[in-house]
Length: 361
Ligand code: HEM
Image (cartoon, rainbow, N blue to C red; front, side):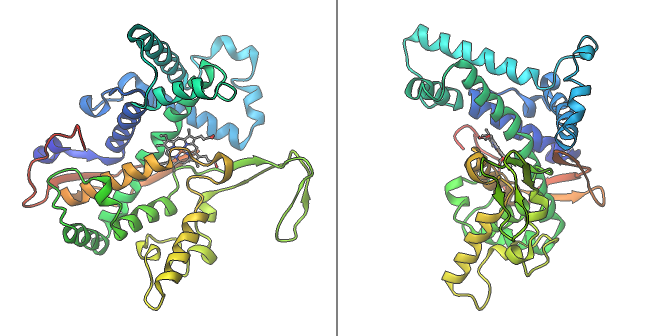
């Protein structure tokens, strides 16, 4: 970004933020950099492959019967290429084997350096739950496919809406400046998480544009399920689901401010509200926002995602100015709701110094 800001080249923000999210997740999961940001390239075409897999996934989630005629059809097998997401499984299997060999050679036990080590440690501590290496591979695979496109998309959404509205941008910058942050180093999570307006823009971005755009299905358990509004008794086995794009716009929870608009103030205490009332209203919105899912299958990477969002949004806004090169962006719902056309010129803000080392930040 520093280089592009200095050279004044066109930046496709949604692409670079995806690269960041993929790099970050590889680092956290396997403790290595795949090099998306460094090379400016979709290394190994994994992001492109994930996109293709998602198109298929989105189609079959909406119309499951199609799978039987497509990849699930044995007659078509010889004509189909590699299955989607094969790279993620291969990478996970290879990483497990390499890490186990590394620990054996050094006679060490898995520690907590990355998700892989944590999962291997869990395999020793809870052998009845993490029953084999294939379960560890599954965990790693889920991290890879669930944690990068989602976080990259949310980063793009939040920055897009913040820079589109000069009032919101100025208010966020005033908060950062009042907290002593001048954009000359990466914002630490410890400092960022204390800033209520930064939290408000992050929450609002997550609310208005959840990265997952189709329903999160659940199966009605034995005994059936009675709809709370007095609707029909659904028999066990029925698939039910809610779409965060709909429920996150429920006026009774997120109103009365324009629920289709980007209004971070809904996440702040209102004039006339006591601290307790405001706190309870905001806690209720956070509880009912469906962006990370709900219940026993809720996103396990939520804290990691929030950490990335707070740090990147705070640092970017404190450090860079943005000039839009296209009027509106486009969005496409293929299970993940990807934006495109977030084309900008980026420049360093006046008086912002060189970034130091990024290793410890
Ligand atoms: C803004 C970023 C993110 C969003 C919006 C998001 C959203 C979601 C959603 C909606 C689910 C399904 C929940 C359900 O069915 O109720 C999910 C599952 C999951 N997410 Fe995330 N996610 C994000 C980032 C991450 C990150 C960074 C990681 C990894 C570090 C991650 C790992 C996972 C995993 C492993 C699951 C599957 C959990 C399970 O089935 O038990 N996610 N995520």
